[in-house]
Length: 288
Image (tube, rainbow, N blue to C red; front, top):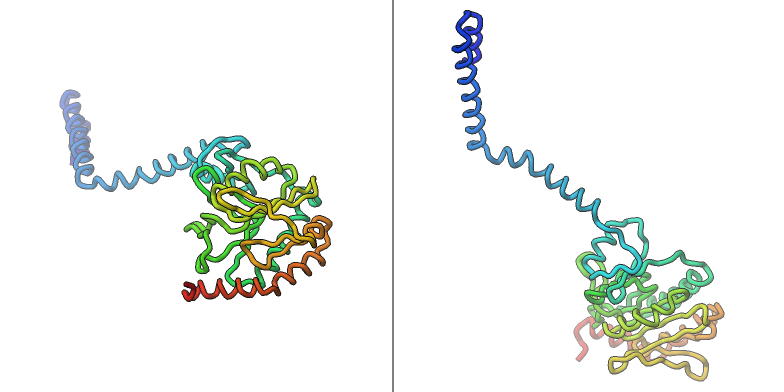
C-alpha cells in the first residue's frame, strides 16, 4: 500500500517535501515489520546463524591444533587429542610425559625378531583359555604414560586379569606381560619405559636387545623388577604364565623349531594344566 501511495505521489507531481515524508513513512514501517519478526520468530534467526558459527569455530580449532613432535611434554588427554588429529601417524608414545615417535623399522633389527616373539606368544595363547594376546595395542597407564608395546599377554578380566578395555577400545590398567624389541630404542625401553611399567604394576617385562643379542625378562617383586634367570638348559620360565617357557639362545639365533619345542613342553607341563583349571574356575566363579 505504501508503495502505491509513493508511486501516486511521485506521478501526480506533488511537492518533493511530501514525497520525502512518504519515503520516511515507508522506511519506518519496514523497521517495525522487521522488529516484529525478530520478536515473533527469534529461533529462526538463531538456527540460521549458529551452525555456521559452530562449524567455522571447529574448523579453526582443528587447523590450529599443533602436531605431535618428538620431545613434546604433554599429559595424556592432550597427547591423544593431537594423535587423533594426525591419522597418517602410525606410532607415537607418551613416556613419563614426553612424546616419542617411532623411526622407520628395519627388517633384521625389528620386524623379524618381533614376528618370532609374536609367534611364540600366540602359540601359548592358543593353548591357554582366558589368556589374550595383542600386537602394539595402545595401553593407558596413567596421566603421563600411554604406550604401544610390541606385544602384550594378558589374563582376561573375567579370570582376574588387571587390565580392562576403555569405551574407545584401548587397554587400561596393567597387562600381565609386556614385550619390547629394543634396537635403537634400548635406552628408552630399559630406562623411562621400564620405570613406567614397574610403577604401573606390569608383572613381567621382556626386552629383546637386538644389537646386544640379549634378552632380559623381569618379574615384579616388592615393587621392583628382578631378572628371571635361565635354568641349566638355558630356558626361562614365566612366573605369571605357567608353561610359558623360552629357550633364550634359540630365540636369539632364530631357531624357531627349538623355541616352539620348548614352549610345547611347557604347555604340556603339570603347572600349565593347573593354571588352566585355575583360570576356568575363576571365570565360572568357583575359585575361592
